[in-house]
Length: 93
Image 1 (cartoon, rainbow, N blue to C red):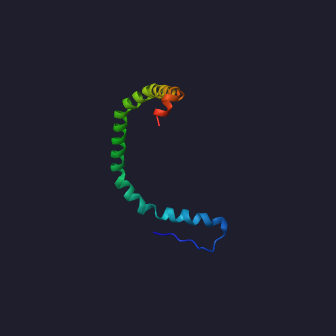
Image 2: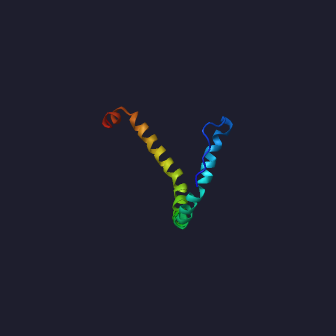
Image 3: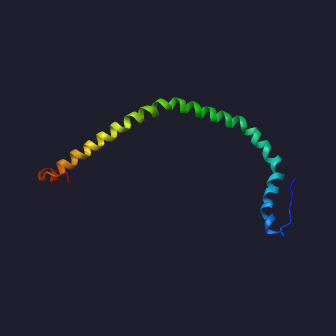
Protein backbone atom coordinates (compact mmCIF):
# COMPACT_ATOMS: atom_id res chain seq x y z
CA UNK A 1 0.00 0.00 0.00
CA UNK A 2 1.47 3.35 -1.01
CA UNK A 3 0.05 6.61 0.27
CA UNK A 4 0.59 9.58 -2.01
CA UNK A 5 0.24 13.20 -1.07
CA UNK A 6 -0.05 16.03 -3.55
CA UNK A 7 3.24 17.79 -4.29
CA UNK A 8 1.42 21.13 -4.46
CA UNK A 9 1.03 21.18 -0.69
CA UNK A 10 2.10 23.98 1.59
CA UNK A 11 5.71 23.99 2.87
CA UNK A 12 4.37 23.27 6.34
CA UNK A 13 3.29 19.81 5.20
CA UNK A 14 6.24 19.04 2.91
CA UNK A 15 8.08 16.94 5.50
CA UNK A 16 4.95 14.93 6.26
CA UNK A 17 4.97 13.47 2.73
CA UNK A 18 8.10 11.46 3.49
CA UNK A 19 6.73 10.34 6.84
CA UNK A 20 3.51 9.11 5.26
CA UNK A 21 5.45 7.16 2.62
CA UNK A 22 7.60 5.57 5.31
CA UNK A 23 4.53 4.54 7.29
CA UNK A 24 2.93 3.08 4.20
CA UNK A 25 6.02 0.99 3.44
CA UNK A 26 6.40 -0.27 7.02
CA UNK A 27 4.67 -3.60 6.35
CA UNK A 28 6.95 -4.43 3.42
CA UNK A 29 10.06 -3.59 5.48
CA UNK A 30 8.98 -5.34 8.68
CA UNK A 31 9.03 -8.90 7.35
CA UNK A 32 12.66 -8.96 6.11
CA UNK A 33 13.78 -7.33 9.34
CA UNK A 34 12.06 -9.97 11.45
CA UNK A 35 13.48 -12.73 9.26
CA UNK A 36 17.02 -11.41 9.70
CA UNK A 37 16.67 -10.91 13.46
CA UNK A 38 17.94 -14.37 14.55
CA UNK A 39 21.02 -13.96 12.38
CA UNK A 40 21.70 -10.53 13.83
CA UNK A 41 21.31 -11.83 17.39
CA UNK A 42 23.69 -14.72 16.64
CA UNK A 43 26.25 -12.28 15.27
CA UNK A 44 25.92 -10.03 18.34
CA UNK A 45 26.36 -13.04 20.66
CA UNK A 46 29.45 -14.15 18.75
CA UNK A 47 30.95 -10.66 18.97
CA UNK A 48 30.29 -10.54 22.73
CA UNK A 49 32.11 -13.88 23.14
CA UNK A 50 35.08 -12.60 21.11
CA UNK A 51 35.24 -9.45 23.23
CA UNK A 52 35.11 -11.54 26.42
CA UNK A 53 38.04 -13.60 25.14
CA UNK A 54 39.98 -10.49 24.14
CA UNK A 55 39.35 -8.64 27.42
CA UNK A 56 42.38 -10.11 29.28
CA UNK A 57 44.61 -9.13 26.36
CA UNK A 58 43.28 -5.55 26.45
CA UNK A 59 43.92 -5.34 30.20
CA UNK A 60 47.45 -6.68 29.72
CA UNK A 61 48.15 -4.15 26.97
CA UNK A 62 46.83 -1.35 29.20
CA UNK A 63 49.35 -2.39 31.87
CA UNK A 64 52.23 -2.77 29.39
CA UNK A 65 51.79 0.43 27.38
CA UNK A 66 53.19 2.83 30.02
CA UNK A 67 56.27 0.60 30.37
CA UNK A 68 56.75 0.45 26.60
CA UNK A 69 56.35 4.22 26.32
CA UNK A 70 58.97 4.70 29.06
CA UNK A 71 61.34 2.31 27.27
CA UNK A 72 60.93 4.20 23.99
CA UNK A 73 61.50 7.53 25.77
CA UNK A 74 64.70 6.12 27.29
CA UNK A 75 65.87 4.96 23.87
CA UNK A 76 65.19 8.41 22.46
CA UNK A 77 67.14 10.02 25.29
CA UNK A 78 70.11 7.69 24.66
CA UNK A 79 70.00 8.45 20.92
CA UNK A 80 69.91 12.20 21.55
CA UNK A 81 72.78 11.91 24.04
CA UNK A 82 74.93 9.93 21.61
CA UNK A 83 74.06 12.24 18.72
CA UNK A 84 75.59 15.16 20.60
CA UNK A 85 78.99 13.43 20.59
CA UNK A 86 80.69 14.55 17.34
CA UNK A 87 82.33 11.22 16.43
CA UNK A 88 79.15 9.21 17.02
CA UNK A 89 76.98 11.67 15.13
CA UNK A 90 78.97 11.11 11.91
CA UNK A 91 78.67 7.31 12.25
CA UNK A 92 74.88 7.36 12.52
CA UNK A 93 74.39 8.87 9.05
